[in-house]
Amino acid sequence: MSLENRRLCARLIDDVLSGRRITREALLRFPKGEHDTSVLAAYHALIHYEADEDLRKRDKDYREEQDLYLKSIADILISGKSLPVNIINNYEQYYAGTVLPEQKGFKGWIKSLLRFIT
Image 1 (tube, rainbow, N blue to C red):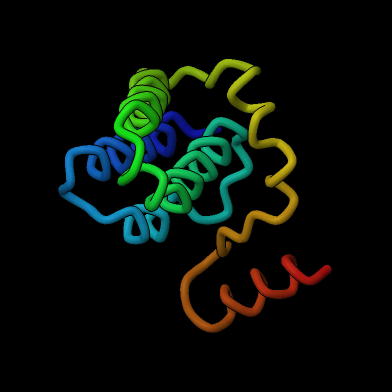
Image 2 (cartoon, helix red, strand yellow; image 1 turned 135 degrees about the vertical axis):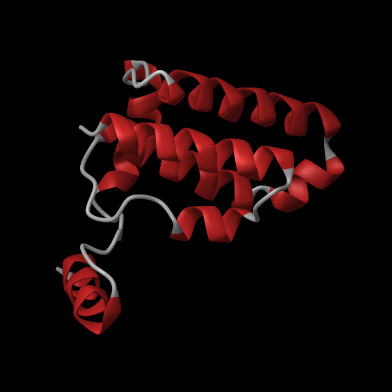
Protein backbone atom coordinates (compact mmCIF):
# COMPACT_ATOMS: atom_id res chain seq x y z
CA MET A 1 0.00 0.00 0.00
CA SER A 2 1.31 3.37 -0.94
CA LEU A 3 -0.18 6.47 0.62
CA GLU A 4 1.00 8.50 -2.36
CA ASN A 5 -0.66 6.10 -4.84
CA ARG A 6 -3.98 6.40 -3.04
CA ARG A 7 -3.71 10.18 -3.11
CA LEU A 8 -2.84 10.11 -6.81
CA CYS A 9 -5.96 8.03 -7.50
CA ALA A 10 -8.08 10.51 -5.53
CA ARG A 11 -6.72 13.41 -7.58
CA LEU A 12 -7.37 11.52 -10.83
CA ILE A 13 -10.97 10.83 -9.83
CA ASP A 14 -11.45 14.48 -8.86
CA ASP A 15 -10.00 15.55 -12.22
CA VAL A 16 -12.53 13.35 -14.04
CA LEU A 17 -15.47 14.58 -11.98
CA SER A 18 -14.48 18.21 -12.50
CA GLY A 19 -13.94 17.75 -16.24
CA ARG A 20 -10.23 18.59 -16.10
CA ARG A 21 -9.31 15.16 -17.43
CA ILE A 22 -11.10 12.58 -19.54
CA THR A 23 -11.73 9.20 -17.94
CA ARG A 24 -9.49 7.28 -20.34
CA GLU A 25 -6.52 9.52 -19.58
CA ALA A 26 -7.09 9.17 -15.83
CA LEU A 27 -7.19 5.38 -16.13
CA LEU A 28 -3.90 5.40 -18.03
CA ARG A 29 -2.30 7.46 -15.26
CA PHE A 30 -3.20 5.06 -12.46
CA PRO A 31 -0.15 3.70 -10.58
CA LYS A 32 1.61 0.92 -12.44
CA GLY A 33 1.99 -2.51 -10.86
CA GLU A 34 -0.20 -1.60 -7.89
CA HIS A 35 -1.75 -4.43 -5.85
CA ASP A 36 -3.51 -2.29 -3.22
CA THR A 37 -7.17 -3.35 -3.31
CA SER A 38 -8.30 0.23 -2.62
CA VAL A 39 -6.46 1.44 -5.72
CA LEU A 40 -7.82 -1.48 -7.77
CA ALA A 41 -11.37 -0.77 -6.61
CA ALA A 42 -11.00 2.92 -7.55
CA TYR A 43 -9.66 1.90 -10.96
CA HIS A 44 -12.65 -0.34 -11.60
CA ALA A 45 -15.08 2.28 -10.32
CA LEU A 46 -13.71 4.62 -13.00
CA ILE A 47 -14.02 1.91 -15.63
CA HIS A 48 -17.69 1.51 -14.70
CA TYR A 49 -18.11 5.28 -14.76
CA GLU A 50 -16.90 5.40 -18.35
CA ALA A 51 -18.88 2.31 -19.37
CA ASP A 52 -22.07 3.92 -18.02
CA GLU A 53 -21.69 7.04 -20.16
CA ASP A 54 -24.93 6.46 -22.12
CA LEU A 55 -26.92 5.71 -18.99
CA ARG A 56 -25.48 8.78 -17.29
CA LYS A 57 -26.70 10.95 -20.17
CA ARG A 58 -30.24 9.54 -19.97
CA ASP A 59 -30.69 9.32 -16.20
CA LYS A 60 -29.89 12.40 -14.13
CA ASP A 61 -30.48 10.62 -10.81
CA TYR A 62 -28.11 7.79 -11.75
CA ARG A 63 -25.47 10.32 -12.84
CA GLU A 64 -25.73 12.21 -9.55
CA GLU A 65 -25.53 9.02 -7.46
CA GLN A 66 -22.51 7.77 -9.41
CA ASP A 67 -20.78 11.14 -9.06
CA LEU A 68 -21.38 11.13 -5.29
CA TYR A 69 -20.08 7.55 -5.07
CA LEU A 70 -16.86 8.41 -6.91
CA LYS A 71 -16.46 11.59 -4.88
CA SER A 72 -16.72 9.57 -1.67
CA ILE A 73 -14.06 7.16 -2.96
CA ALA A 74 -11.78 10.10 -3.73
CA ASP A 75 -12.40 11.66 -0.32
CA ILE A 76 -11.39 8.45 1.45
CA LEU A 77 -8.31 7.88 -0.73
CA ILE A 78 -7.02 11.45 -0.40
CA SER A 79 -6.71 10.84 3.34
CA GLY A 80 -4.70 7.68 2.64
CA LYS A 81 -7.28 5.39 4.21
CA SER A 82 -8.42 2.06 2.82
CA LEU A 83 -11.76 1.97 1.10
CA PRO A 84 -14.54 0.24 3.05
CA VAL A 85 -14.73 -3.52 2.59
CA ASN A 86 -18.11 -3.30 0.83
CA ILE A 87 -16.63 -1.08 -1.91
CA ILE A 88 -13.58 -3.30 -2.31
CA ASN A 89 -15.81 -6.39 -2.49
CA ASN A 90 -17.99 -4.77 -5.19
CA TYR A 91 -15.05 -4.92 -7.59
CA GLU A 92 -13.19 -7.98 -6.30
CA GLN A 93 -14.39 -10.15 -9.16
CA TYR A 94 -12.51 -7.89 -11.61
CA TYR A 95 -9.13 -7.79 -9.84
CA ALA A 96 -7.72 -10.94 -11.44
CA GLY A 97 -8.18 -9.46 -14.91
CA THR A 98 -6.76 -6.05 -14.12
CA VAL A 99 -3.95 -5.12 -16.45
CA LEU A 100 -1.87 -2.33 -14.97
CA PRO A 101 1.57 -2.57 -16.58
CA GLU A 102 4.56 -3.01 -14.31
CA GLN A 103 6.59 -0.63 -16.43
CA LYS A 104 6.31 1.56 -19.50
CA GLY A 105 7.32 0.58 -22.98
CA PHE A 106 7.17 -2.58 -24.99
CA LYS A 107 8.52 -4.83 -22.22
CA GLY A 108 5.85 -3.61 -19.78
CA TRP A 109 3.16 -4.13 -22.40
CA ILE A 110 4.31 -7.72 -23.03
CA LYS A 111 4.34 -8.48 -19.29
CA SER A 112 0.81 -7.12 -18.97
CA LEU A 113 -0.39 -9.12 -21.95
CA LEU A 114 1.10 -12.32 -20.57
CA ARG A 115 -0.45 -11.67 -17.17
CA PHE A 116 -3.82 -11.07 -18.83
CA ILE A 117 -3.85 -14.26 -20.94
CA THR A 118 -2.53 -16.61 -18.26
